[in-house]
Image (cartoon, rainbow, N blue to C red; front, top):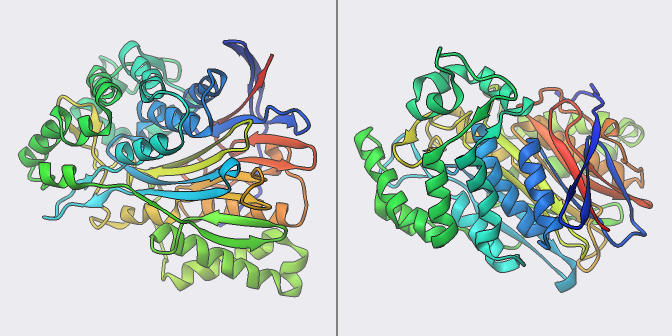
Length: 453
C-alpha cells in the first residue's frame, strides 16, 4: 500500500523575464534568501507555466491558477475543464488560511456526466487572492492549446493506459492519435483549437463565459444529445464554496486540510487521527512509515473500502511565493478523462458523475494540505496527494517527518506512492535552512524555483 521505491531525476535551467528559474527533480533554496517562490506538479509544461507566472510578478495563487489551466491542456486525463477539486490557501501576510471547494457534482436530474466545478473554483480563488489580471493567468494555457505543446512523458504514460478511452472519443482521438490511428508518442505536438476557443472565452469573459455563455450552451446541448442531463440551469447555478479548512496540530505545526464535510476532508482527517494513534504505539513511535501503513489500513477499513479502480483520474500541485503565501490544490475528473466524452465545439471532456460508479470516490482521496507553525508564518509544507489512498498516505508520511523535525530536502527522501502515475504526491517542503520543490520520485513531474536576479 505504501512503498519506498525511489527514483532520481535530472535538473536543468532556463531563464524568464529577469529571473532565473531552476527546473528539476530536486530544488533547494536557502531560506535566508527572501526568494522562496516555487511550484511543483505532475506535468512539466504546466509547472513551467507556474514558474513563469511567479517570474512575471504573480503570487502563489496566480501561479497555481495558471498551472491548473495549463494542466487542463497538457494533462487533461486528470485536470480537464470538466472536472472539480479542492484548494487550500495559506496567507501569512493577512494571518488567514482558507479552503476553496469546487468538486464536480451530480446533475439534479441524474445522468453520467458531472457539472464542472474547476473554472468557477479557480476564478473565485484568484479573484480573492491573485495579484495579476485574470487574463494573464489564463493566456498561457490558451497558447498551448492553440499553437500546440509537446506531449510530455507524464502525459504519454497516461495516454497509453487510457488508449481505449481516447480512441472512442472523436475529440480526444483527433488531439492525441496520429493519422494511422496510433497514440502520439512523447515529444509529438498536440493542439486543441476548440479548447483554445473555450479558454479564450474564459480569459475575456471570466467564469460566467463558461457557465452561462456560449460554452455552457454547447455543453448542455451535447449532454442532451447523448442522453445526459446537464442543463443550463445546472451550469448557471453552480457555485464554488469558500470556507474554513480543518486545522490539526502535528509537532510544532498546524496542518490545514479539507474540512470534514467533504469526502476528502473526512478521509484525510480520519487518516491523520489514525496516524496519531498509530504513532502512540511502541512500533509507530520508532517507525514513521510503519505508522502510516497502519493508519491507512485502519482508515480504509473504517470507510469499508476494499477495492478501488486503478486510475481515478486525479492530480495535485502546489505553489509558494516570496511573501510566504502558499497554495495546495488537487483536482480530479473521476476517472481517466472522466466520462470520456468531449462536448462538441468546446474541447471540454466532461467528468464522470460522482455517483455513477466507483471512480466517484476519487474526490475522497484529494489531499491538499499546508503546514505552518502559525497563521502568520510561512508554510513548512505545501503539497497534495491525489489519485488514491497511496497519495494521501505519502503526504501524511511527509507531515510526520517534518513533525519530528526531520528534513526532507531531496526528491529521493519523499516517499513514492508505489503506484505512480495514478497516485502521486507533490510537495514544497521547508526544513532548517532549505526549501525544496519535490515531485513524486516515481512519477515524471517537475519542481521549479524562481529567484530574482
